[in-house]
Figure 1 (tube, helix red, strand yellow):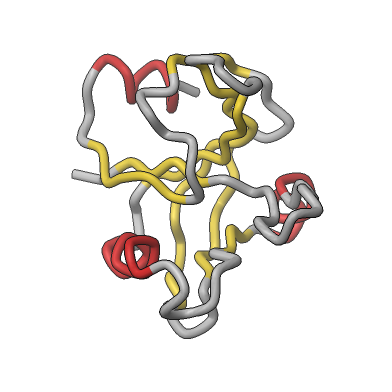
Figure 2: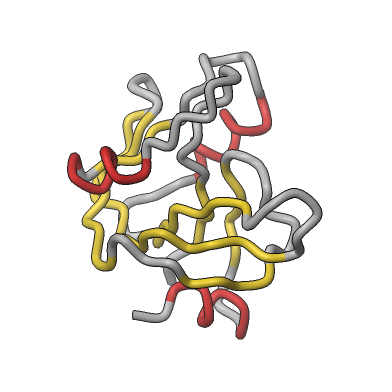
Length: 123
């Protein structure tokens, strides 16, 4: 049974550059923190497996309880050293608004199948 992951695509270096369109074209998602900078994200990246589902998300604004889903895909390959996953993006250029469930940071999961993940990941 695949696991579900929510991932951000905005650079955290203060410039707020959104990489989601670039990554959708390239068929990847990247963890932009260096190894060891954010151990919680290192641990999550290490748990992603081929066949898992991933969605690129963004915040809907400060203080909002919703997020926007921008793309949905299936993990094809994981490179811990390269800090990235290769993704078969099934839906791109989306704008699906869903409850955030606290997913405001860079990488969240794994989530199991439930009503919320069905709403987030439905094709």
